Image (tube, rainbow, N blue to C red; front, side, top):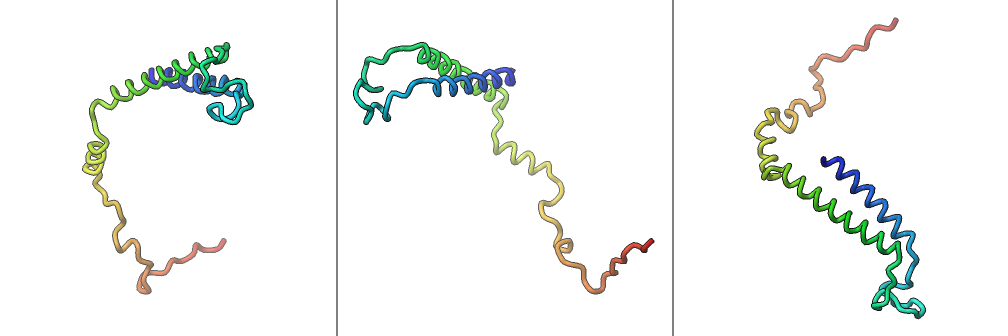
Length: 119
């Protein structure tokens, strides 16, 4: 179920990006500096087909986001990240760092490594 919602969410995100990029620019940010004709701050914005599609995709995107959040909350089953850390560290039996003898280079008294015989 999560995978289906995730795929729908990704398709909605890509569609929303595409629809927003297809729209005509209205001038400067919040209508400032764009030559006349009203900007985004005026109440006379024409609801074109692309604007309606953008709203529909945005609402669907938010709904899939909420659905994924609810599914993730149900799957967590009330466990905490701290609980997972303490459980995994208690289950770990070998040390995190190697022994001190493993870090030292071989001493002069150790047997030399002999190369394999040449054929």
